[in-house]
Length: 305
Image (tube, rainbow, N blue to C red):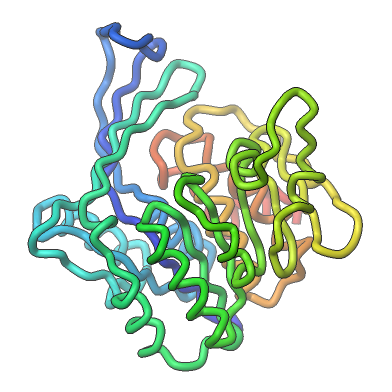
């Protein structure tokens, strides 16, 4: 790898119930199966990049509880450097409650805990400690206080890194921070929120063009793959890898982690997006946010290389 992947994001533990269908409001659906997994967008994205061979440092926070110890151990076992993962003595580790139906669709509720207690100055200090970030890729997601995500992007750009911002969830985002973003990776819903363009005539390429990013908006489209909308030049699609879907949880995180890993390896944007789409597809073939994230050999098979 020619550069590091530095992930700034959340770390959660996922508590998952599998059932035949998702309940309607006020309804109880019995007969489900319970599983516990490691999650959080930051943890997932860091794991995805590490599995693909990147040198990965995660900046985030967990609580001083058993869930936090478990999360830290799982990340270290995946090859992620957790020296920048703080332990908050007063906040609980983030928890995600996930319901998954027989078709692999899900609904998620998150108690963010220590993730939302992570202050901008803590991230600024960690990034400053690293010195020059030239050649590195900094990947930031939005399961943090928006001002913390913004500080991470601003400091990363100032230190020479290439920045990726995954605006999930698309809440509390000031579009002015996009001046520090090289690559923005929203799904269609997040793109609609950020651009303010909704309705039956919504056009992803047009909406992406309205956002002032430095390099490109990469719209993730689920089973349809992705659409890359460069700041300059024509948009181009990347088709998804055809797989048998089991659980879509973590597919977007696999995409972002693989994108960062490929760019840190010096690959072109076109090749990096192609690898990211394939990684996102493969991540849906096994249950859990991280369990389906591919290793290099699996990704090479899926890409026919």
